Image (cartoon, rainbow, N blue to C red; front, top):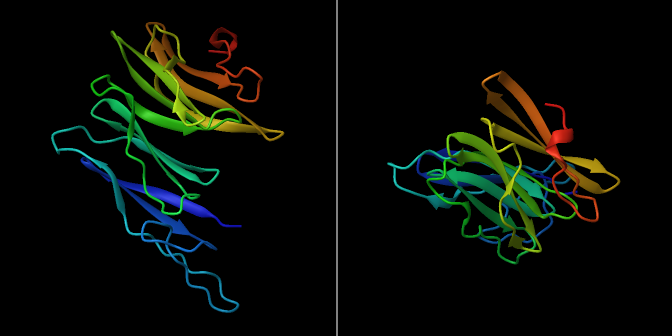
Length: 214
């Protein structure tokens, strides 16, 4: 089975991606995964692809925060740029693999940062981040279904200081639920909070936050 790993190398103004493979059976192209060398009875040699630029901006902008995933043959990168959130992907099913033009999910200047990515049975991609809301910080999510991004949803309470979300997918009988956890603070102190998106339900959506232990 083909296995792929990806890592991100970033500077304050440029995002680049490196891909490496342990084995590959596809015919490679200029923009595809790198070729591997295999000798009789010898394990394949991993060869890193040359870095490609996904996005860039002037040095007087803010340094990106970013996360990458590889899911069902699609490599994805979610990153912050000048207080906004952007998404780019590359499909291994395409005859020529190139990174998509970044899609803006949250406008620049909105104080957005600390992106997280996950997937469910009914949602191709779940993008999560924190952003400013008046004097507060809150957690938002956006889901991509059938190639279309839906509107932003509020994941955390509207009052508080919810920051630095992390996400993971729960496997259960082939269905995927998503759990998101974050740190929150109020005048009474710190909390670690979590919320589940039951992606395998007939009508998926965020579970009631009030029923989750704070």
